[in-house]
Amino acid sequence: MTITEVSGNINVPQDTLRYYERIGLIPRVNRNKSGIRDYTEQDCKWVEFIKCMRSAGLPIEVLIEYVGLFQQGDETIEARKELFMEQRKQLITRIEDMKKTLERLDYKIASYERIVVEKENELK
Image 1 (cartoon, rainbow, N blue to C red):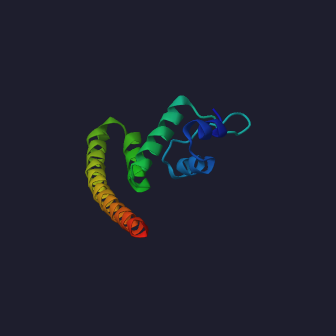
Image 2: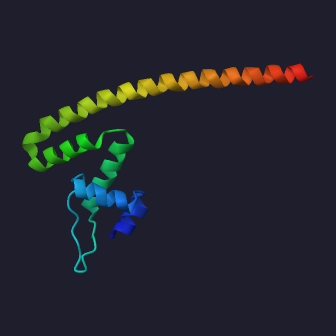
């Protein structure tokens, strides 16, 4: 699959795919005889995984560490698990913070809605 196809299918910009490959977030993608990237199904799974983790807020540095551990083989399984457990804790904290922010926004919106209703009632 070409970079254009992967970009369209997974909804990741081509420049981002090139960047991910350059910094080692995804393994080096094979190229065809013309030098054009030829993504395999496995390459696409890596891209989808990285996209998912990035959308959850995992830092690039953590993902680079994970990929490095993964490439070292099964002896790093426990280290990879611990890395993800720590990221999970941090994600839970961010979710809780976001819930508090959402509650505060809801309160502010409701306050403004009350003001609008009061102003409309004054005009009657």
